[in-house]
Length: 296
Image 1 (spheres, rainbow, N blue to C red):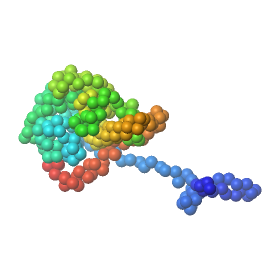
Image 2: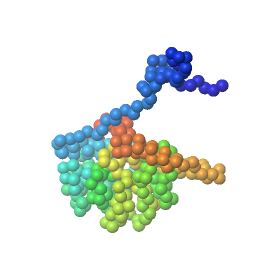
Image 3: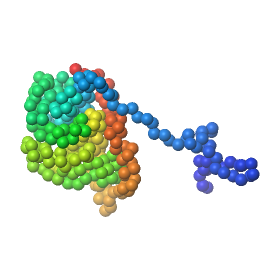
Image 4: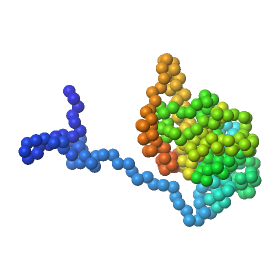
């Protein structure tokens, strides 16, 4: 037997039938009201006082490190997240070299200019040279980027050893549809200015880069977006590694999402505002778990 229609026919005055606009499973609910409406999302806070904005962004950056620590994105002293300073936009704040992600507080962060000089910050004023070379070049090349994130996460660096971009095989991967690049070079630890500039040039106007034999790099117009894109990209790498292995073991391959469907999905989940909003639960949870300690 065929399933009942969602719309029951109703009789007109002349006896003809026409589709009803009532949703039979929700009596009294019209068809138009039954259609799912996307909510109007909130957005990041705005500031008129640049010093207040600086203080807020440093707190969000400290929270971002706690999130990275929680998810195991630390690898010894490797990894860095930066945020552009709103008071002095040609400088950025970054984690001090050698301080564990899970211990970082707002007061620990150091301020660096585009020449690599530490001009302000906490007690530990050590700068990771690779952090400066990569992030300094990205911030300089991309005025729209507020935050950049890079670490040697396990699935990201594993996938980056394959020398390929993501396949569009899941809804989540569509966040990166035509919005990520593959940097096809590895010359050791990024200690040269040219290497940082090459990475920034390869990134172009995209939000993510797969650094071959190295790891993931994500950027955003908010701290939250950059952090969420990193977590999501890491999980997309994990999903593709597992899916490719399972499909290959059966002599097949994964089913790819159609180009038009991937592009349509990107418009919903791949936007800057979607990235910011998707990160909200992460930041809410870390605030509760740390009891706001990172704001010290």
